[in-house]
Length: 209
Image 1 (cartoon, rainbow, N blue to C red):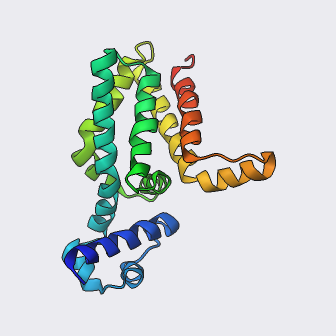
Image 2: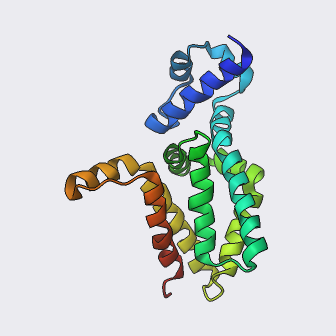
Image 3: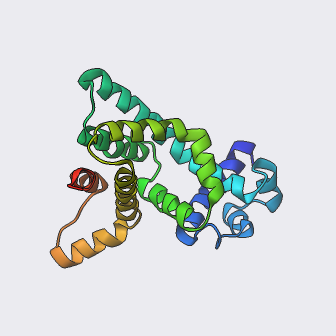
């Protein structure tokens, strides 16, 4: 088995297992068994479980931030001052949809991101800030500029309410879609869900204090 194949197998197995079981509940032995490699391969290519978790996120975060940065620059060059709905369209319709177009599942990404914050993966926050903090600060800064009448603490909470709604809606998409189908006889695609999510998130951010 070649080195790229080994790394890819480990990352693929880890991504699925972490999303299904969580980080703390998934052992390296379970990952290597699923990937069909030995434990030494994980230690050789990644060094530790924490570094493997970071490598799983890197496969999502690198294309995600690249799509988001490009779209923010495109909109700024055309429209100048960006509004809240412009920024959320950049986040949902371009950055998250771009992951799907590249074969990376946005729903799994949101599931992993939610777990990173609920399972005390402090190293992930440091990793994200170090590697991708400039994109986050750019997006949050533009969003802050688009909401000049909101005090910093209220903005902080609204930002995280919006992110929480996004993470929950997408990470639980299959279950929510099943309820929609059973209760209303309707179906929804990821694209339709993102289109519905954008105005709801805009209202969450722009409502009266």
